[in-house]
Length: 81
Image 1: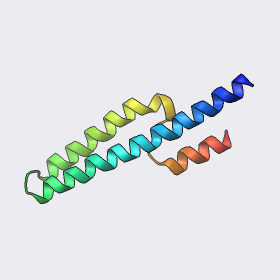
Image 2: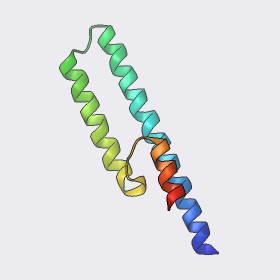
Image 3: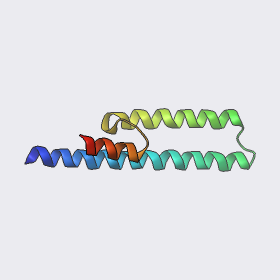
Image 4: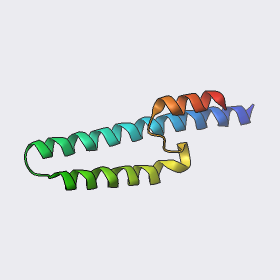
């Protein structure tokens, strides 16, 4: 019974981390677009911000959920396991 409870908690943790990662990446990318429209960032800086953002979130989340950054994939993987 405890093993199944731990599996359920792990699945909830994975889904939460995927949602957190997706929201965080979206938030940062939207702000980079806003600053680009204000002529404060050029295309090179936006690309650098996007690359660093994906790198950081991947390193933070990959051990917990695999860092798919797509909650649909995480949800389907949780159902299949």
